[in-house]
Amino acid sequence: MNHKPSTINHLKTVLVGCGRIMDRHIEAIGVNPGIQIAMVCDTNEAKAKAAAARLGVPYVTDYRKIKGMDVAAVLTPSGLHPQHAAEIAECTDTPYILCEKPLSLTLREAYELFGRIDRAGKTLLPVYQNRYNPLVAHMKGLIDSGRLGKIHQFICNVLWNRNDDYFKIDWHGTRELDGGVLYTQASHYVDMVHYFFGEVVEHKGIGGSLRGFEVYDSVSAAMNFQGGVVGTINATVSTYRTNYRTEFTLIAEKGTIRLAGTNLNTIEFWDVEGLAKPGIDFTIDHVYGKGHDTLYQYIVENRWDMFPSRKDILSGIRLMEMLSY
Image 1: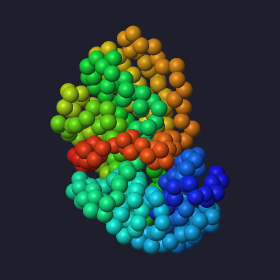
Image 2: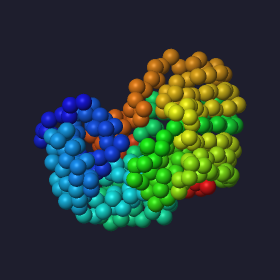
Image 3: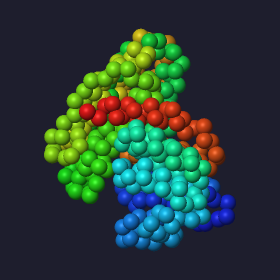
């Protein structure tokens, strides 16, 4: 995708970290008039230089040297997100700090990060792009409407493959920077059940490092929410050869619904009292979904209310920490 040329009216964005997720941000910014990539940063100069040449922008290898940007997108290894986001807020003139998932690996780090961002007078924008996917948003509205009656149970399975080459990348699979399957692969689905059902009051589960990593590659967890909903999350990166399934089944007083497909973009089963299956095309033709597009649109439109609240974020990180057995 060709990047938009610079104009004075575009918000200037610096991409901090030139790894796997960078291309999704380049695409998302590319489809949003009013915002542009104006700089890239990576401590690996070869990566930074290659990305800069591709985009036709300058690069730096030290994020403390970032100047004149409106938004800094933190796309670095998971365990470094709190440090990088906080130091960019403190050491640069960038007012908005966008941070990829997970925001932090612990609740303590999250509280510290918010405190440092506040003291710097900046704004933290966490990336929860799956909340903006059309079918997830539709399900949230349906649950909140009460049309399903009492929600009884859910089953969420994230059964993916990350091969040995993936874990040869320096930080993947490490306790310090990765966090394991729930943080690095399934975090958006943990957030989804938190988004749908709220606070967990009880949880049990087990995790396994079956491939010898420092973190869990497989987790099974059962939980009970404040409203009485019970459910399970099963997540792995060890399916044979390729990703197998992403699926979510909801069992309610007045309906049963099963979602599947990339980023849960397909209704596989629908039986809801008095409500026909939606005649909407929820197809998403991207492995990461298209939520990043919407996220950058909200930045351009100054729709800060569309980002999760601090209370919501901290509650979700608390749940992640609970389930990281």
